[in-house]
Length: 112
Length: 112
Image (cartoon, each protein chain N blue to C red):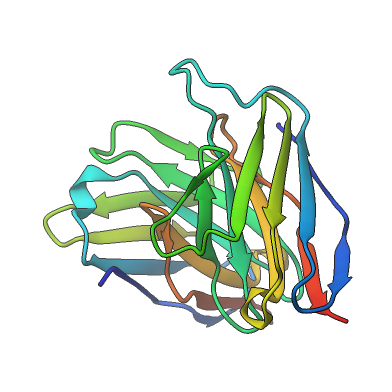
């Protein structure tokens, strides 16, 4: 069974940092590009970042470029999202997605 | 960025009725590989999104064959031959051909 389990979310003040993790199991993680996608409360889905299987190709949404960093450790089957200079508009449920499977999401709330 | 326009915004249908959702992209989703990376996903209330269809018309193995996808270039359609109770939720189209990846705003399927 494929599982993607996100962690690392929480309540953080504006301007601070947070690092999300997504542990994958049930498929060959190192073969697949991975995405972070977020959903603000009551809103639709917004793509955040992509990393290719070998980390050679990385892309970001303009809204997070320069503030967020996507990375992966294929030996640990883990995807990361380092988020810095957080803003209130970054408040959302963050999903990792890979091989068409989605995690359950982790909530990030940016508020003073 | 590629804009994905979904219609209708909502659908109210009885069990057993057919459903049709349109998704139009602001530019062609035909990639240089010759593949069209247009996906459909379903987000049931309180759940994370689940995969339905990839590359316009290919159903994932666990998806019932009452679902079908069609289209090309910039116009795509998701059809449900006979709605069942488990089909309720928000349907999203999203494109993986161009970066940034983009999502439609969603179509909410409700029971009449």
